[in-house]
Length: 329
Length: 251
Ligand SMILES: Nc1ncnc2c1ncn2[C@@H]1O[C@H](COP(=O)(O)OP(=O)(O)OP(=O)(O)O)[C@@H](O)[C@H]1O
Ligand SMILES: [Mg+2]
Image 1: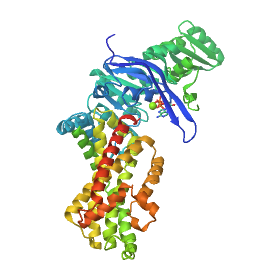
Image 2: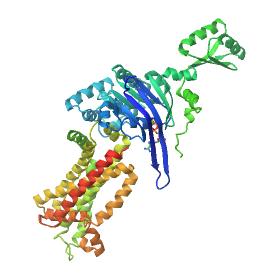
Image 3: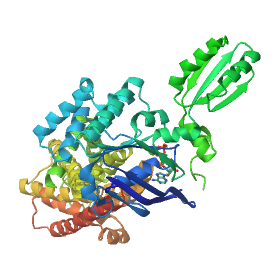
Image 4: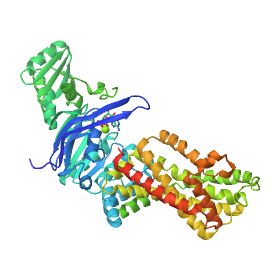
């Protein structure tokens, strides 16, 4: 593999947080993370709250000096060549970072000019981005009047205003309605199509699945798994189909019909739970088979593997119950 | 670098101008002093040892110093807000020089102080303040130096403590004694010898003396070179400190 556009080797970050006059709290936020992202890839960093996603990203953006390890962006060292790194990246933080009293347009104009565009170029570029993200309508209002979702789209706009070859997005879709979310997805897809590399964090496997070529799952500051979304899903064995029948007898007979064609099958009184790959394609076939066997299906549910399931499989802990890493120390 | 500083300055001025309320709100305190405190001084203006012929001539220059001290001394709070909203982080990830950031912010608080100072002088004229034009212009320069010093300190502290509550505590802890021992409120000559000794190492003491001398047009007063020299040095040192904290401590 050629020099990757993003390379992290044993990246670490330890925070020493003082609690008033009391004892020091040592937080090992990132504990030896290795990452390689090739040019043109969409790469996702997944993990629960407090896993170290933001900390990792901030180190990669030169905002936070690593406590150990090293990293390179397009061949430039994170510490020695900060200026060169900064020229090549865009970063949309979890918090966003719009000046509240200024309008969205003013914020974007400043951003564009700080990346070296002339006033005229900036005005033009901002118009292009506003139209593309369909946010021109409220561009001339102060950003403190925006809804959470509107602000988030503006945050995205500020990250792409200078068309960076490498774009960092920290939870770009958290708190967005489906429409805004798909707008973000669309934009990520377009940038990807234009050859940009995108490094994003998310809590949703479904989102990683839709957007990312490869993902890494982090937990307590370490990468616990990486691969394509399909590979990760294979870890939990695929999609789940739940079928409900009128009686336990029907369920048992359905089980016999399907036994040979599915990976895993669990029977629970009048319900059957099947694990299959490509559940959406398999479901009609399964229903047809049951219909042919004269076994009426009363209820059907298809669920795709969730990050929670992958995570449970990998760490033995459920995401929803995962406590923040080392916080109590 | 200059261009980046200018862009940030312009943006910040725009933001400040959008909420002009704050400029006037900041002026509220000195104006209240002018209206409610200065009249009390008129009673003691005849007291032996009182340095000026009338109370407004004594008090208005002090108010200008006080305004610079407080206005720039609390500038850090704005920066903490920018830290919290992520605005600062957004600037830091752009390729601009850290120096541009520093200059942009320091200039904003300095320009605010300048505007306020001019407004304050104008407000004091009807109260019988006499000014020498040359002296007043030099005084503005001195006020700029004080504003740079206080602004740099406040900004650097803001980046270090990162918490508005702590910043308020630290700022008040330092600013009040400095203010009281500067002779801004009352002539230091009225105080006991010990306090006069302490005041003698307070650069603001010379600055407030110099402010009076400048406004009255006594350009040869000995406090003026001391005030300028000490605040040139202080402004440079604090600015360097702010630059260093910006380069290192911002997380
Ligand atoms: N400045 C800091 N000082 C002390 N501890 C910190 C600091 N920043 C982050 N941490 C700690 O480091 C750990 C990782 O935080 P980080 O923000 O990277 O998590 P995250 O994966 O982005 O979580 P989320 O999904 O909630 O955004 C957490 O335990 C957090 O409390
Ligand atoms: Mg985060």
